Length: 336
Image (cartoon, one colour):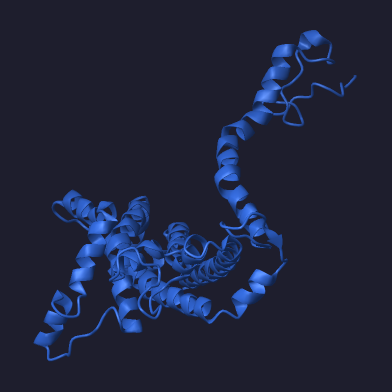
């Protein structure tokens, strides 16, 4: 009995190496054109399907990133004729720049004040909307309205709410005997005000993402947990949170990236329209505002590019820390 080396067929009808089997008529040797086309289709089509994303990412994402790193090595001014190569001097100058570190502290402060409450409230809203409520669609649309509202309108509204002289917030605080707060001049108070703008806009958006993942959890799991005697809180801890882990990773990472790149809210919060100073002493100037100021007010593109790269590294570090924390919390809940 002779066993051929080609054309051996697996249980699923394909060749031993996953390729289509050789047709009986070709003598176990060369494949026909149709079989070769089918082979190439199976092997290479998936790469062609996802290729548009990587091509677009290379053009609008990877190229600017690499080109920015190149520009950061030059004394590159918009008003000068030729850029001058200076190596890492921009980074060295940035490390000794007190204004940059002030902007970095402002950014991290606003990020912490906005992201943590935002995700907690988003999870709470998702749980409430997952319950049996009447007119749930109206509530869901209501959560999304702040996200689609105009940012300019948002800046005007919150600028008036936090106005020192006639703002509603100080008016309410006055009812409890609290002195008016100068929300624009006080550094921490300005961070709280800007964080409230961020939370108001993004909480509903994140809540709907979490709600969509929550409603995809099989109801059989909740029924089995109920039969085992688990209460509502135990079902949330032991069923809901572990099943939401991939979605929470996504929400945490996107919130981290967006929170550390905050630009529009502090720019609109400034009392001087169009100012990039972040207040009279830079008390709420973020890193992106500082980078924009260096690039398009001072025309120092090399310095602005170095600022962008340092911010990029900070975002990567924070994203990895948040990813690790979220994964550790979820793993702890799983082990209970």
